[in-house]
Length: 116
Image (tube, rainbow, N blue to C red):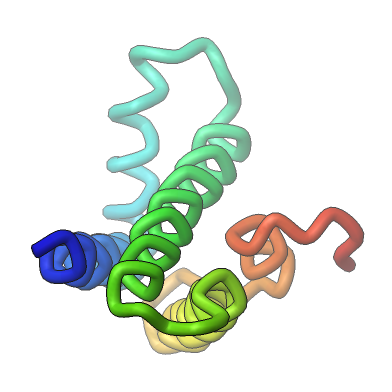
């Protein structure tokens, strides 16, 4: 039963990422500004924190999804899934008005410390 729950959570998480990535620059700024009223941080910090958090959640969900399916190298599979999804997400943003793909966001999403 757990494998189905984590599978659903993984796809819901991916859908949420897609939803936010599909927002044009103006709408995305409005969404970010909404959260700024609750936190005394810069817009840049809020966006990077959100990016890190949603991908950390994706990592958690995919890790347990693969583990509960009995995949042998579930941690590696979860990492590969998250990296590929982060790359596809950045590519997707290249088609959205006012948005642009950034390799830095892939690094933030996958917790890589040394990145251009």
